[in-house]
Image (cartoon, rainbow, N blue to C red):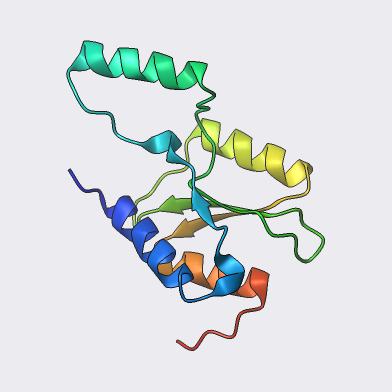
Length: 125
């Protein structure tokens, strides 16, 4: 099943491939949908949590220092109706305190604007 948020995030990653300075922009698969029945998903989730999966971690991370920040976290939401969970709010608040630029992007265009501004990319709309 493809979700609108997934398509928006894919569009950001596809766009980023045109900019060498964005080569380390990467996805954090904490929101991945697991396959299988309820028991299989529970086993997969237990294994992933043991490997370090944390709920609330933002969808994208750009490990490039700019503007006094250590890097940039991007929480992707669909263009309309996306909701930031309490875990996501906590993560973003904590990362801001640690010196990271954190944004919630409603759709790919908003994410691209945030990244472009942060990296001072000359992007034509």
